[in-house]
Length: 219
Image (cartoon, rainbow, N blue to C red; front, side, top):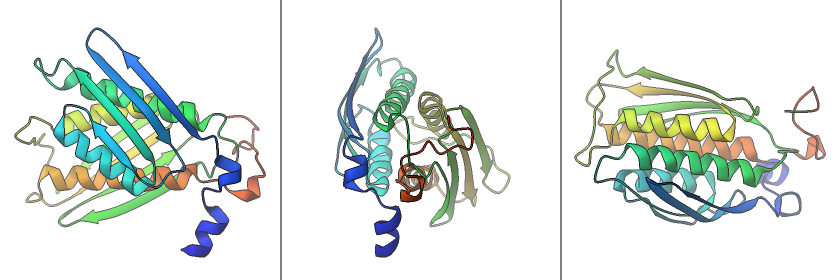
């Protein structure tokens, strides 16, 4: 792992500027990202007003080695829909902004991990083209389970689609597991896997020598 990090790691000289701040304000929500550092250590300070989403984003950033500070408020007295979706939009735009022209990045990654009786597979391509695919393979079940706060797999899909759309990436997600696994485990697997996959895809490959990772010469 140490040698891999040295060869394909997030080298400071190549990626010192891959950090940003971002704000988004509408009549429904207000989101502030004082810091997003692609080449961080997984330090987080996240308060979205949606407890379950806070937990998922913390896992995502920790396992992706992204430093992320994020504060968000909105009309959660109605429901979580607007704030959840807008946090996804803000996150996607912030990552897109921090990555810039994406020169030298690995670009594509696929990761699969277990979480007790649940699991997830995430495949991404930072192609500058949006595509989103979510496949539920929970032993044939398609039930939209939710927690006491009201967060659900449906909300997670909305977040992931908004994130992928604004980051302009292909994002394919497969949820795996047995019917007795709970939503927390399913989505924990998804967000951990997304963090690991995005970390791999955003690493600098020194063999690219600062080139855009496309045979066309442009993404």
